[in-house]
Image (cartoon, rainbow, N blue to C red; front, side, top):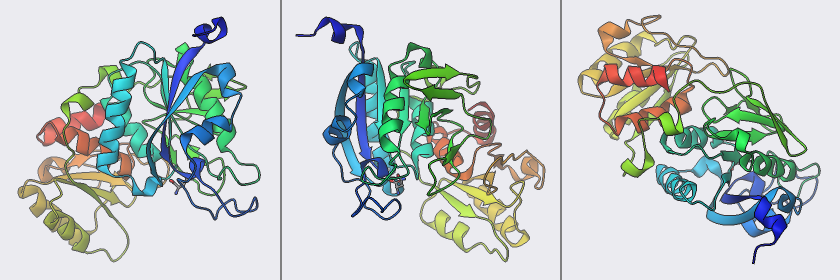
Length: 337
Ligand SMILES: NC(=O)C[C@H](N)C(=O)O
C-alpha cells in the first residue's frame, strides 16, 4: 500500500550501467586507482537514504561496465529500456548512472532517439564511493532531484555532474581526475542545489520528441570510426577503417577540421566508394567546422560536423545512417541536431 507521503512524490527509476559511481578502491586514499563497475544499484541507492525524500526511487541494474567498454549493443539495449519506462504512467523520470568516459556519447544518443519529454538524466562520478570526498552521492542525489522535477521536462536528455545541469547534446568530459570534469561549449543549462533546479537556458537543437529518429525503428547501428589528425599523418587508419566496413569516417581534424595533404586523395577515393566523410575538429573545447573552409566540401562531397566533437559526430552519423541519407541530407542532419 502506498502511504500519503509516497503518493505525493514523483516516481524515479535509476538504471545502473556501471562506471566509477559504482567503483570501489582499496583504501579511502585511492581517489584515482580503483575498479569501476563493482557496486550494485541496490547498494548505490541505499547509500543515499535522502533519495526517499525526493522521490519514490527504484533501481534496475542494466549492465555493470566501465564506460570505456560501452558498445553499440549497450546503447541500443539501454535506449530500449529507457523508451519502455518512459511510456509507463507510473514513471515520472529516469536517472542513468554511467561511467564518465563515454557518458557524453550515451547522453547524445538518447537525446536523438528517445521520444518522450520526461526527464532522462545521466550521472556519474569522478571518485569511487570508497574514496574521501567521493562525489557520487551528491551527484546521484542531484540527478534524482532533476529527474523528479517537472521543470526538467522537454529539455532533452540531461547530464548532472558537480551541481550543474548540462544538455546531453553539448556536454563532454573535458577534464579528468578533478570533479569539475564536464563542460558544455555553450554553457550549462542550470544548477541543482539542495534538491532544487535553477534553469538559465534551454537547448534549441532538435531532440527527443522533435527528433526524426526513434529507437523503436532502429535495429542496429552501422560501423562509424574516428581517425585522428596530427603531424606527419598518412592514410593508414582511414584505409583500415574502410577495410573493416566503416560506412562513415569522422576525421578528427586539426584546427578547423583541416586534412593533411597526403590524406586528401584517400578521403576523396573513399567517398567515391560510398563512405561518408565527416570533418570534425580535435580541438578540445569549442570546435566549429564550417563547409568549404579549409577543404572544398561541395566539390569533395564531404560533410562537416559543425560544433560536434568527433565522438558526438560518430553518434549522430550512426543514427543518421540508419535512414540511408545522401550527403546533403546527412549535412542537413548535422546542422539540425
Ligand atoms: N569516472 C569514470 O566513471 C571513469 C570510468 N573509466 C568510466 O567511464 O567508467
